[in-house]
Amino acid sequence: MAHVFRPSANIERLKESATIAVGAKARALKAQGRDIIDMGVGEPDFDTPAFIRQAASEAVEKGATRYTNTQGIPPLLDAIAADANKLIRPGSTPITAAEVVVSNGSKQSLYNACVCLFGPGDEVLVPTPSWTSYYEMLELARCVAIPVFGDVERSLKVTAQQLADASTARTRGVMLNSPSNPTGAVYSADELTEILDLAAERAWWVLSDEIYQRISYDAPAASVLQLTTNRDNLIIINGVAKAYAMTGWRIGWAIAPLAVAKAMTAFQSHATSNAAAVSQHAALAALSNTELTEPAIRHMVAEFHKRRDAVLAVLAQFPSVKFVYPAGAFYIYVDVHGYKGADDPGTLFADELIETENVAVVPGGAFLTPGWIRASYAMKQSVAEEGVRRIARHLVAGRREKQ
Image 1 (cartoon, helix red, strand yellow):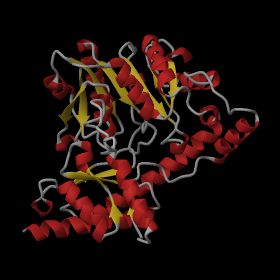
Image 2 (cartoon, one colour):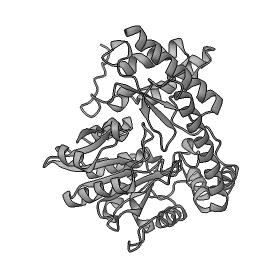
Image 3 (cartoon, one colour):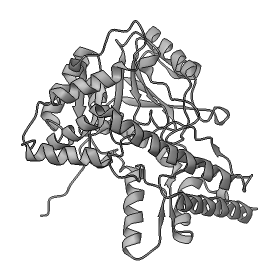
Image 4 (tube, helix red, strand yellow):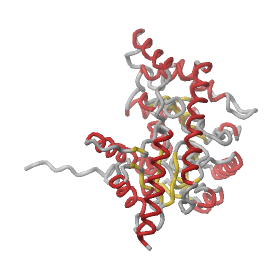
């Protein structure tokens, strides 16, 4: 008799990443010859800067092909700490290399933190909409994700009061992400400070995912490191994927209180061991050569800024189409409520859009907001403009059809 796979209790409710699934579908359709505008992708379309690629090549030739310390190579730990210390609030204790753990992308850093901080019976507040993997990571950590929905009038951001109202005696933490994936909204320093003050008062852990922190347009996005001198309950997550155009290198890190950093290192030692040695050397080059890196980041962000403005100019031609104002990251979050009267308008819209308009987007149900869709403009400006034009045109036609 054939052996039947039955998912374990660990994964029986686990859902595939919707963002990855959209990308896979877009690639499959392109392979069939379809001219797809893939606006589901969540990565910069720029090449990793040449000097970083060269540093990686040189590192391989010098023997960077073996295991490293689980926590990361010492020069990279030092560089991450030094970079973070540029942000810390005056009066803060400097961050040390011992408080840094390098992982296989910021996704692993987040998961490590969830597993080490939370467990059965714990509740973690998740401002919603949020990146789809937050909910699944918390599920895998066997705790309970509590969505806290932001108001559209506030760009779907949540307030400290909303978090307080959603909390219970079992609340142990809160996930933050600014600039936000999927909305592109950016929390102000005052908004973040109110949340940090509440978390300190309630003894909650704060996981601050700052992977898009450098990609902000109207004003610099605040890091929580700039807002408090107390890091006892803070875990800051970052990496080289977005700002340095290094998604495929898979290097992220957590900055955490020493006891938490040690626990995360121990967990990672059994889960994956060290991040790829050559990728660590590439990340070291990115963080150490600021005279080369900073111009590259400024150029990339300036290009994203132009694309953001171009996309907004297209949407201005469709005044009935509503969206979250994208102050950072490289996404536009479009309101599709009412599309053909569907119960899950985001999924129906995304499915029909790719079939009829050859545009791939992520349905908002992936972020627990089924009345929305996420579109990335991390692509050539003219392509982004055309993609958004098709989105708006299709949405207006679909709503008209319902009437």
